[in-house]
Length: 398
Image (cartoon, rainbow, N blue to C red; front, side, top):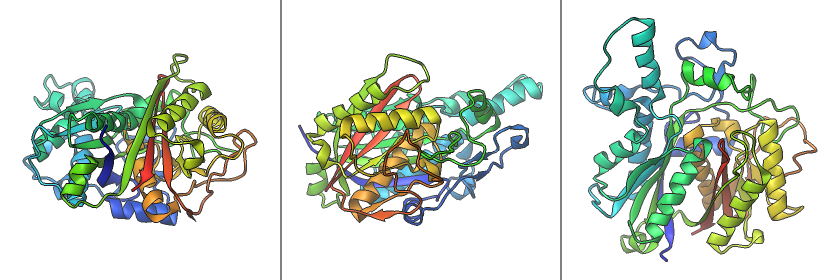
């Protein structure tokens, strides 16, 4: 089987509109969560989120093309272009290049605008571009069109694990020889009135801050954005003289087959073990875990139990960058993979912000509030989704 490496990444998120800005925010421990500013936000009970600020589509796309793109596709295209530029890849890779991208809600803003037009404003017609804008595969398809990628192209929708599932499948495509290069990760633009109102019904959103693993945590905070990584066959990357950022070493995917929303320590532990086995790693090889770490009472307890089941009483440092960029649902795993790349390339662990005090149910070293220098040989990146769907990626230093 072929080895797979990362040669580029790009991102748009609440911390920054690009990769360098995002890494700097991780280093500084800066938080992108704030008051929501979209239409009708004042009608919400929960009015905070990790919103992408200063975004104007006209700054990134021709005005004539903007009607084609929901915000989720805009984020994906900008992040994908940055990733391709970093990797130094030409356009037109043809059948040996592909895209697998995760999203949980697709073009939810287009749904909302169309519902408003029909039900609230009494219109009888909507734009003929509504369906192409809202479909979940739109971001992946637009990346394929933009960069001439004619191999495997598809969307993955598995709630909070969408990006990790997408990256795992992209990794497997390259390892199996079906492609040489894959753009992969996730995109989400769920911060709109209907998106947050739906989440309010679950009563899992925090009113003040995201405080993963901390005593006094009150829930999760929704975020928006995209993360796109370039996965590439190692021999393909070396042959063209590309800079290799890290190795994608393994993936583990499991299902709890239990409750539709309640987390399972067993399913999470099995996913971590599967990723380690796929990567040929022992537990002692892992120097950092980027946790799912949503900040809800149930998730953080279950994830702690799973980590300690796999790694014993002295697990490696664990942090949740959701405390900075929010829970970007179908994109969040890609943002967290970028945090893992920073740990591997810079020897710096991103912190968990908002930590008030240790929770006896979460006995972990969560790198509270300040980034920490460390020797990092390998990392795990966890994603545990509603529906009982788990996906864990293992990355190794190049």
